[in-house]
Image (cartoon, rainbow, N blue to C red):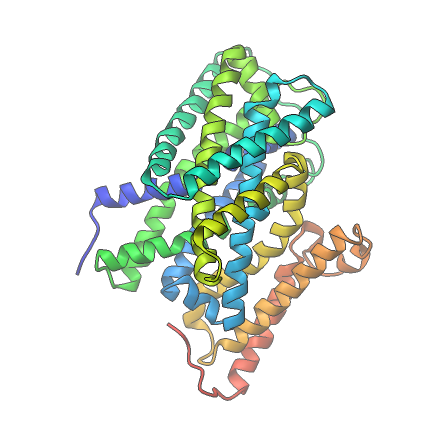
Length: 442
């Protein structure tokens, strides 16, 4: 039986960390730490669970099914088309790409511009035109250069953050400020919900295929062994991510920032200035700009390749151009606005993703005819999450008094109650309904 060596397991664990760790993994724990204050440790614990924890859960679910496509098809072929499409839109032109482009501006250019609204708007427009022109230039001819740059920049960013952390330990002790709402009342839950923003849990559905292909190449066919290796990869990357989050959240909590800030990019910039002076700000600006460029090129390339296979009438180059233009337009909303928009969208996608992960892991314990369990549970969770998104975005929470009657909804997890009801109904249906040709897939 083919097996991986300890060295290979360690290597693939670090590879997974490199795939998951991006600019967003820096700014969100920094903001969390600053807002959570003296509740920083509880908040960052919730963040780690929903970020690294859900990513590991996703990999295990996919390994248990065989591929992400098999897992999604257990619900329905239409779902297997729409859900990955929604994920690619989220990690592509809808959120992640424009967020990275806007973040590059916030960290690389904005600190050196006049502090006026007009200068910021014009600066962002000019920057995004140049930035996404470069992204287009590189992405139209994919090469290993971007991957190599990313693998070099990630360690440098980590070394820089660790250096700042060590330096902060020798500074005068500053008491942590009081946590602000909602980190004051429910720090763990708030941190868990903040973990959605990194989108690492969703990326598990995209990156999972890489490891299933790895097992095929290595001729590792034993399902239990695959799951064991994925858990090992996940634990290695999860430990590395956790260390980074703890350090960054701690730095955010210790930062001397008067008032409140909109996002973690401001927190990091202030931390660097306070500890390393203007030189630190310049260094961080350069690294963030190049890192975000590398991330965007990689995401545009991946999304263009996916959309080309789904909508083949449009060529790869045309998809690259469309993605760059669309991402540039969205990036001009500004980082703060993009982050506000991302909350309801990810609040809709994540409950569906988590439910699918759990069903995938529990698959062998489901009724012999399991399709009703998948269909009813996912449908109820999806409809409830959609209702929540509409309520928060269009009706500004007008229906909150009614939704709060649902157990766990006060903490933002009413979908778990709805999903539990769907699971019970689906299990009953699976035992009653005849299996009309459908079998338990993988």
